[in-house]
Length: 158
Image (cartoon, helix red, strand yellow):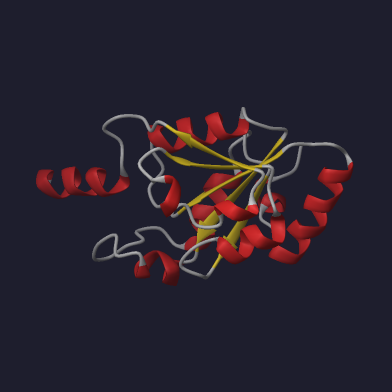
């Protein structure tokens, strides 16, 4: 089993691995997000995504792209390297790849995953890069879990 650090890949290295996995007949699944403060909703999403194939790649927004998403002041709370390391520690995650753009469209164009997984809170027309995936799976998210709501609850208790 690869160490957490070894799971964090550059786009170039991941594109090579993607080609290899394709030759091996493996189904490659991709999901993405900020993954700022990990919670049970994230775990459920990652495990469901992994169950849809043989390999799970997780794209994670850079700090700058996360800020541009307008999640709120002081976001992301955790730096990219810490968010990537936490994601890579999950046994269901095979590779983590940071991206600096606002969406993973360019990354998906290079990787061409077999399955692109997003939360059902995204409409089909809102899923960036969907045209580069073999199919898109929208999964129901764990009710009551979001990083924004978690931060709000913590601030109310302070």
